[in-house]
Length: 150
Image (cartoon, rainbow, N blue to C red; front, top):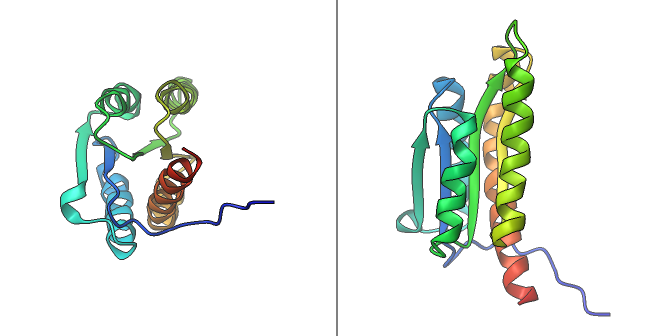
């Protein structure tokens, strides 16, 4: 049996990041951790493209545009949806997650989803560094896996 090993070498990969500007402190933390991990894994600074959007619901369309451009080996979605007093939290959380997944399935470009959905600001702050770094690793691993499968 041929097994494809996990490959976390980002050298030569082109990564696109779409970051929400809503909940800016958390999103900045996600981006910092993500960028740090990408660079540590060998992705060149010049091979990382960042696009910012107003909120989580605008992330999927931007991801779709980037995926269709064929300029990226993998994409990363960064955002934070923090529960409020209305049903809006569920709508934004569910729709952003569904649409992010649809982008990767429709286009064949892996998308690491690090749009946090938390009950409180404190939970989001606790998770931002870990989840930002994890998203970078997922993007690298999936880009390499799909390359090996082609």
